[in-house]
Image (cartoon, rainbow, N blue to C red; front, side, top):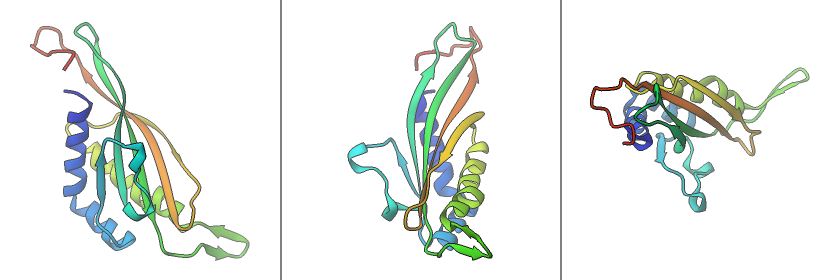
Length: 155
Protein backbone atom coordinates (compact mmCIF):
# COMPACT_ATOMS: atom_id res chain seq x y z
CA UNK A 1 0.00 0.00 0.00
CA UNK A 2 1.15 3.54 -0.71
CA UNK A 3 -0.25 7.02 -0.17
CA UNK A 4 -2.05 7.10 -3.52
CA UNK A 5 -3.74 3.77 -2.77
CA UNK A 6 -5.12 5.35 0.41
CA UNK A 7 -6.15 8.56 -1.34
CA UNK A 8 -7.88 6.63 -4.15
CA UNK A 9 -9.82 4.61 -1.56
CA UNK A 10 -10.82 7.80 0.23
CA UNK A 11 -11.82 9.60 -2.99
CA UNK A 12 -14.13 6.74 -3.99
CA UNK A 13 -15.67 6.63 -0.52
CA UNK A 14 -16.26 10.39 -0.52
CA UNK A 15 -17.93 10.61 -3.93
CA UNK A 16 -20.15 7.59 -3.30
CA UNK A 17 -21.36 8.46 0.20
CA UNK A 18 -25.06 9.35 -0.09
CA UNK A 19 -25.24 11.33 3.15
CA UNK A 20 -22.24 13.50 2.26
CA UNK A 21 -23.58 13.96 -1.27
CA UNK A 22 -26.93 15.12 0.06
CA UNK A 23 -25.25 17.56 2.47
CA UNK A 24 -23.21 19.09 -0.35
CA UNK A 25 -26.12 19.61 -2.72
CA UNK A 26 -28.51 20.79 -0.01
CA UNK A 27 -26.22 23.04 2.05
CA UNK A 28 -23.78 24.21 -0.63
CA UNK A 29 -25.76 23.90 -3.86
CA UNK A 30 -23.29 21.68 -5.71
CA UNK A 31 -21.97 18.12 -5.68
CA UNK A 32 -18.72 17.34 -3.89
CA UNK A 33 -15.58 17.65 -5.99
CA UNK A 34 -12.54 15.57 -4.93
CA UNK A 35 -8.99 16.32 -6.05
CA UNK A 36 -6.38 13.56 -5.65
CA UNK A 37 -3.04 15.33 -5.60
CA UNK A 38 -2.53 19.09 -5.66
CA UNK A 39 -1.17 21.22 -8.49
CA UNK A 40 -0.34 24.57 -6.89
CA UNK A 41 -0.70 26.29 -10.27
CA UNK A 42 -4.36 25.19 -10.30
CA UNK A 43 -5.35 25.00 -6.64
CA UNK A 44 -8.99 24.36 -5.75
CA UNK A 45 -10.82 27.60 -5.10
CA UNK A 46 -14.19 29.11 -4.29
CA UNK A 47 -15.75 28.07 -7.63
CA UNK A 48 -14.82 24.41 -6.92
CA UNK A 49 -16.54 24.31 -3.52
CA UNK A 50 -17.57 22.15 -1.90
CA UNK A 51 -14.34 20.25 -2.34
CA UNK A 52 -11.82 17.98 -0.69
CA UNK A 53 -8.23 17.82 -1.93
CA UNK A 54 -5.97 14.96 -0.83
CA UNK A 55 -2.19 15.44 -0.93
CA UNK A 56 0.62 13.12 0.26
CA UNK A 57 2.51 14.57 3.23
CA UNK A 58 5.13 11.90 3.85
CA UNK A 59 5.49 8.37 5.07
CA UNK A 60 7.46 6.19 7.44
CA UNK A 61 7.84 2.58 6.37
CA UNK A 62 10.22 -0.22 5.56
CA UNK A 63 10.74 -3.96 6.02
CA UNK A 64 11.91 -3.52 9.63
CA UNK A 65 9.40 -0.89 10.73
CA UNK A 66 7.01 -2.01 13.46
CA UNK A 67 4.24 -0.15 11.68
CA UNK A 68 3.87 1.75 8.43
CA UNK A 69 2.65 5.36 8.60
CA UNK A 70 1.37 7.59 5.84
CA UNK A 71 0.71 11.31 6.23
CA UNK A 72 -1.95 12.95 4.09
CA UNK A 73 -3.00 16.60 3.98
CA UNK A 74 -6.72 17.09 3.53
CA UNK A 75 -7.81 20.46 2.18
CA UNK A 76 -11.50 21.31 2.60
CA UNK A 77 -13.40 24.15 0.92
CA UNK A 78 -16.99 25.39 1.23
CA UNK A 79 -18.86 28.41 -0.06
CA UNK A 80 -21.96 29.60 1.77
CA UNK A 81 -24.29 32.25 0.33
CA UNK A 82 -25.79 33.25 3.70
CA UNK A 83 -24.92 36.52 5.40
CA UNK A 84 -23.35 36.52 8.88
CA UNK A 85 -25.85 35.90 11.67
CA UNK A 86 -26.18 38.89 13.99
CA UNK A 87 -27.76 38.13 17.34
CA UNK A 88 -27.44 40.92 19.89
CA UNK A 89 -23.74 41.82 19.79
CA UNK A 90 -22.57 38.46 18.44
CA UNK A 91 -21.79 38.07 14.73
CA UNK A 92 -21.37 34.48 13.51
CA UNK A 93 -19.77 33.67 10.14
CA UNK A 94 -21.92 31.00 8.42
CA UNK A 95 -19.08 29.60 6.27
CA UNK A 96 -17.01 28.81 9.37
CA UNK A 97 -20.04 27.28 11.09
CA UNK A 98 -20.73 25.13 8.02
CA UNK A 99 -17.11 24.00 7.84
CA UNK A 100 -16.76 23.18 11.54
CA UNK A 101 -20.20 21.75 12.27
CA UNK A 102 -21.20 20.13 8.98
CA UNK A 103 -18.72 19.66 6.17
CA UNK A 104 -15.43 18.68 7.86
CA UNK A 105 -17.13 16.29 10.33
CA UNK A 106 -19.09 14.66 7.48
CA UNK A 107 -15.91 14.14 5.44
CA UNK A 108 -14.05 12.70 8.43
CA UNK A 109 -16.99 10.36 9.18
CA UNK A 110 -16.68 8.92 5.67
CA UNK A 111 -12.89 8.51 5.91
CA UNK A 112 -13.18 6.84 9.33
CA UNK A 113 -15.39 4.18 7.75
CA UNK A 114 -12.86 3.11 5.11
CA UNK A 115 -10.41 0.20 5.24
CA UNK A 116 -7.58 2.69 5.86
CA UNK A 117 -8.96 5.25 8.32
CA UNK A 118 -6.99 8.21 9.63
CA UNK A 119 -6.07 7.61 13.26
CA UNK A 120 -4.73 11.00 14.31
CA UNK A 121 -4.86 14.48 12.81
CA UNK A 122 -4.27 18.16 13.36
CA UNK A 123 -6.05 20.89 11.46
CA UNK A 124 -6.69 24.59 11.03
CA UNK A 125 -9.79 26.37 9.79
CA UNK A 126 -8.84 29.64 8.11
CA UNK A 127 -10.82 32.90 8.27
CA UNK A 128 -13.64 33.09 5.74
CA UNK A 129 -13.60 35.51 2.83
CA UNK A 130 -16.86 36.39 1.12
CA UNK A 131 -18.60 33.26 2.36
CA UNK A 132 -15.71 30.98 1.33
CA UNK A 133 -14.00 28.97 4.08
CA UNK A 134 -11.02 26.65 3.89
CA UNK A 135 -9.63 24.10 6.31
CA UNK A 136 -6.52 21.98 6.11
CA UNK A 137 -5.76 18.96 8.20
CA UNK A 138 -2.73 16.67 8.34
CA UNK A 139 -3.77 13.13 9.21
CA UNK A 140 -1.90 9.88 9.74
CA UNK A 141 -2.85 6.39 8.61
CA UNK A 142 -1.13 3.49 10.38
CA UNK A 143 -0.81 -0.18 9.49
CA UNK A 144 1.03 -2.81 11.54
CA UNK A 145 3.99 -4.38 9.74
CA UNK A 146 3.89 -8.10 10.48
CA UNK A 147 7.29 -9.42 9.46
CA UNK A 148 7.24 -12.57 7.37
CA UNK A 149 3.76 -12.33 5.83
CA UNK A 150 5.00 -11.27 2.42
CA UNK A 151 4.45 -7.54 2.83
CA UNK A 152 6.86 -5.37 0.88
CA UNK A 153 7.57 -2.38 3.11
CA UNK A 154 8.57 -0.21 0.17
CA UNK A 155 5.45 -0.50 -2.00
